Length: 112
Image 1: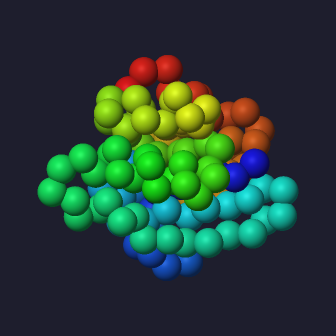
Image 2 (image 1 turned 30 degrees about the vertical axis):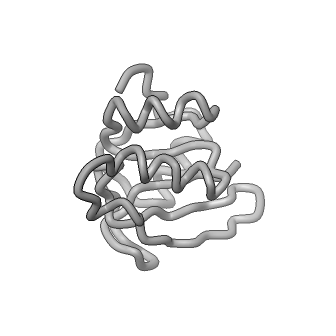
């Protein structure tokens, strides 16, 4: 599964970011191969529509699930029809969040 996690900077080891659309970056992890890449969020500084643009970016990356602190309704409206699963967390390291997701310890977001 390919998972994106919002983080505070586009560098390895960055801390978890609680905002989705304006997160500075995302760590994208393929849980089948453990390949990881940290990518800048091209929508982080958008004047408007950051959640939508970030969602479209992750869809193009082939992501299947997203972990963040908060998803706006417009971002959810783009992510959900694409089949992406959304998970909300309050804190944690990237490795901790992946482990919690794989164990089923993160709750899926039912509403934005």
